[in-house]
Length: 225
Ligand SMILES: [Zn+2]
Ligand SMILES: [Zn+2]
Image (cartoon, rainbow, N blue to C red):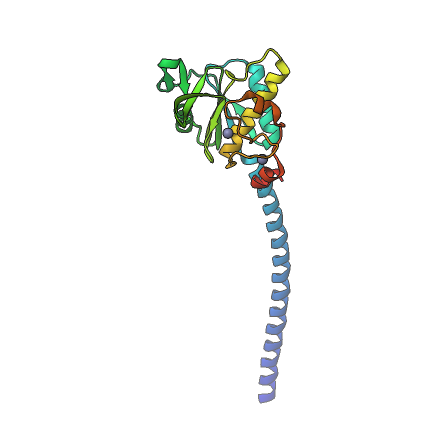
C-alpha cells in the first residue's frame, strides 16, 4: 500500500518534471521568436526615424514654383528628409525694417517657429526680398540667410544671390539653403572646403565652396555617414 503511494507520488513528480522541461523548451522558442520580432521592429523604426524627419518650405511673398521645387529636390536628395512646400504667404509685417526697406531675419525665424505645423520638425522660409540681422557693429546688416545652431527654423533670400547665369543662381540657392538647414541641425561654421564655411556676406566665398559637407561635418550629422 505504502509502496503504491510512493509510486503514485513518483509518477506525479516525473510528470511535473517532464511538463516543466516542455515549458522551458517552449519559452526558449518564444524567446528566440521574440528576439527576431524585436530585431525587425528595431530595423523598421530605424528606417522610420530616418524617413520621419519632416521639413516644410515656407514661401514668403515668393511664387516661383520651379525654384521652390529645386530647393525641395536638393533638401530631399542631400538630407533625405520628407519635404513639403507650404502655400505662399506675405512676409510678416513685424519683420519690416523701414529705414532700409528690408526684413529682419531674426523676426522671420521667430515667426516661422511659432507658426510651424506641429508635425513638422524643421521649416525654412524662402523669399526674394532683402533680409538683415544685427552683426557686430552693424545694427542692420544685409544677409543671404540665417539659421540658429540648432533650431527648428531658418530663412534664405535670393536678394544677394543674383546673377544672370541661371545655373549659377540655382547652385547658390542650393548651397545657402543646405547651409542654413545645416545650422538648424547643429552644425557651426566650418573652415574646411565645405558648404558650412562662413560666407561673411561674400558671394565669392559661396561660389568657392562645393555643394557638399566635409567629412567632419558629415560625422556630426550621424545619418549622413
Ligand atoms: Zn552660416
Ligand atoms: Zn565642414
